Length: 343
Image 1 (cartoon, rainbow, N blue to C red):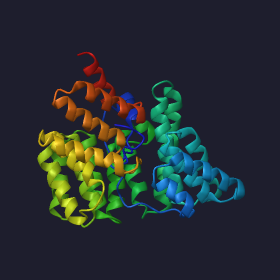
Image 2: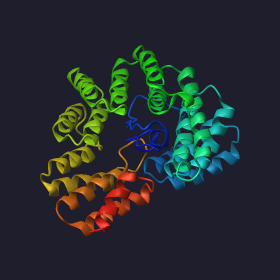
Image 3: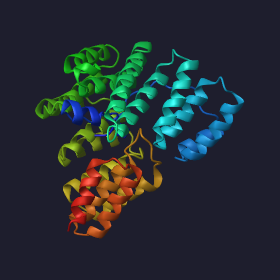
C-alpha cells in the first residue's frame, strides 16, 4: 500500500499501517471530487497529456504574474505531486490554502501531499513522518468539515482513520462515525468506504459481502465498479473482478481505463496472453500516468507477472524495473524483481 496514490489514485498509509498499526489498506480514489478553478487552456493541455513538468514550468510563470491567485498555486501543487516532488507540492498547496483557506479541495490535496511525503520519510526519518501524518489528519479533517459534499475528502479522512493508530486520530470507531456522516451525503460511497474498512482490517468475508451488495445495487457510475474491481484485483480473484469490470463497461464501454482492468483480469486468469499484453500496452500508450488513475507502475507490474507466468523472465525484469523507475518505493515491485534476480 502506498501513500501516494494508488489511488487509480491510491490514498493509503503504508508507513502508519506497517510501522504503527500493523494493518494494510487500499483506497481507489475514484470518488466524486470537489472541483477547483480550471487551469488556463494552454496549461490544461500539458496537464491532460501527462506533461507535468511543462505544466509546472508554465504555472510558475503564471504565478509570477498573479502571485495572489490561489488556484495557480493549487495546480502547481498538483503538477508537482504527479512528478512526486512532494516537498514542493506541499509548499504550493500550503500557499493555496493560505490565500483561500475555505476551499475544501485545497486542504484535501495538501493532506495527500503531506501523507505521501510522510510515506517517503518513513524509510529514513520516522519522527518527520509522524509529524507529517498529524498534519495529514488535520488537513483531511479541515477538508471534510469545510465541505461535506467533497466526497473525496471524506473518503481520504476515513482511509486515514482506518489505518492510523489512536494517538494519531485513527481507529475503527472514528472511521465508522465518519462513514455514517458520509452516508447522509452519498450512500453508495459510504458503502464503498465500509467495504474498504473491512478490507483494511483484513475482514475479507465482510468486505466481499459489501462489495457484492454494491454490485447488486447496480449504481450508475463507472468509478464505483472500478473501485470494486480494484478490491478483487488485490485479492487475486479474477471471476469477481471480471464481473465488476464488465458491469463498468456497460456504463461506458469507451472508458480508457478498461484496457488496464481487462488486461489484469486476463493475467490473473492466465488466459490469452497476447490480448492481455496488448490491453496493458494500450493503456500505457494512450492514458497519461496520473495519481487518480491506475498507475503506469501497476500496468508494468502486471506485464511483469504476465511474462513471468510465461517463463520470459528477462522481459519480466524489464517491466518490474520500469515500474520501479516510476514508483521507487513500491514494495511489491521490489520483491518481484528481487525474486527474479535470484534465479
